[in-house]
Image 1 (cartoon, rainbow, N blue to C red):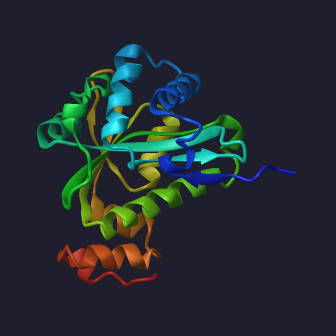
Image 2 (tube, rainbow, N blue to C red):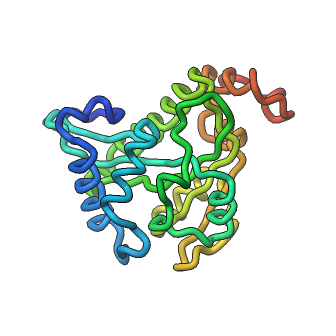
Length: 222
């Protein structure tokens, strides 16, 4: 019988994984799941520990009943100069520092840079990817309830699966990374409307703060 799976925030697993152990696990998953990954593109363990400590709630983890991490997604909110550089394909993940990001602990409007979405291969043909995708919009709604809203989303697609995922989400190729990784971009309102049209709670939360035509005319629940 398949073991039960869940997607959880860091608080749920911090008893087993301090930040040091968490990043050792995630980096190991990255190298095992992405052929061609190097230290230049991945960055260092110590730097990512400091980044996760600064923004601990912008990630979710697919776990089994033993709390083994089987997949995860992680984003950061880059400060404007770094987001612009990333959008031009001129920023490597190894160049992201704690000083480059916002901690997302204050009300306001921010951008999203999705650093990673990864799933252990044996779970790629299960509903685990749906669980991870759904948890992303759960997290976005949780941020909205705290007054944290997002305006743009950017992805550095490293693999063919990553590029396909971005295209399926409706994102547009805007640049080639310096190491031939593809940068995909989308206005966040459009991203929500296309990929979470039935999340009426989330759309209504954004409707209160964004008065653009696409949200004004959106048919909630369709």
